[in-house]
Figure 1 (cartoon, rainbow, N blue to C red):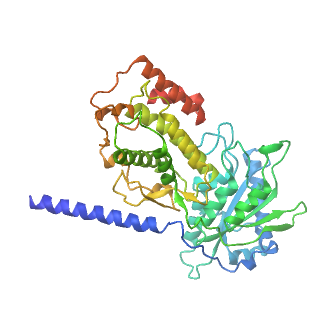
Figure 2: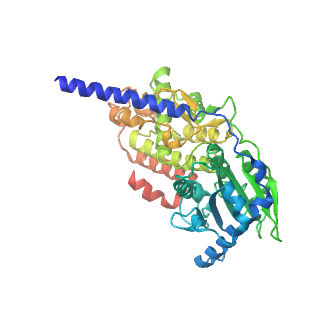
Figure 3: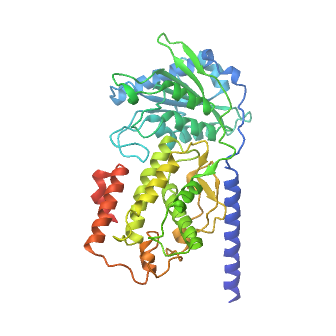
Length: 453
């Protein structure tokens, strides 16, 4: 018996320590974290970067030929140091330390396939692959491995060459490459500097909103502290973005969950909810925490709610909300448009400026009903300690028996007298699910998703 008590005590202590460490971790990513300044940026000039970028272009063209690509666009990323940059005019080719056993260079083409931040029918650009699929991390880790015995610990530089300027302002693609590079660079600014070069602006034969907005792209790169060069037709490099410290989020930034929560509370739910105001408020907070956890816990994203991050959240939360409604409630003919408050509030919240609203970590991490969050500027996976559903063993405990089935956030297994599964109920659920799938861009896979529910 004493042993069990001791074990329980130790388990409790470990839990407390885990929560404490989590809070320290979260605090290190608060919205007001200071911007740092890299080493002497005056050495990063067009003359000094040209030798490395020229070799990167040569490397990329050769790799593109091997891949059999007839597209103009390709991306080459390379991790180096200031000292190597200064030595590069003597290089006839990229040294083995860069292309050898632990390469510090990578080549990327645009890729087809389904991805959360990309809209259907659009390729995933190399910049997104580099940020979200670990390309940058891999080459930087390989560089760190080579520097283990280097006591000088040189300032690292991440060179990025793109044939086209990183995309921005293309209305139907679902993301902005320039924003993703900016968000990556500003979050890692105390570790290395990012330098970008490009040769052309994507316009081709496409007009209107489907061409890249160069001005907007360069502004995003500037906000990330990214020095940028334009490679001219004759091979010279013109600096188009000078170094400036990365932009900070607003001092009065709020959390995504807080804005979502306040919006949901403002909707009149008198016809759909039998709970009193306090319990209803806590239940809405639980719902907000639950859907946010489900859409962030496995995401590659970090930091700002960029265009691509917002698109990913929109698709996921629409899908998760449909699943929540199907599995955890009955939709009654007497309570119409249960999805509309969530849809409207989600759309409204995602329209807010990314510098003023960030995802939030819970002020009380162990309370799934907590309606307080603080802006969090770090990896999305670190927002929650665990699933809110796990915190309550899968059974939120706020639903009352009287007509609680009319409130769509109340799980059916806690309702004493749930409404019968009539044909009308099922049809309404199917229509609601289809509408959400269309909005989320998943119309073609809707039936498969429905059957999985």
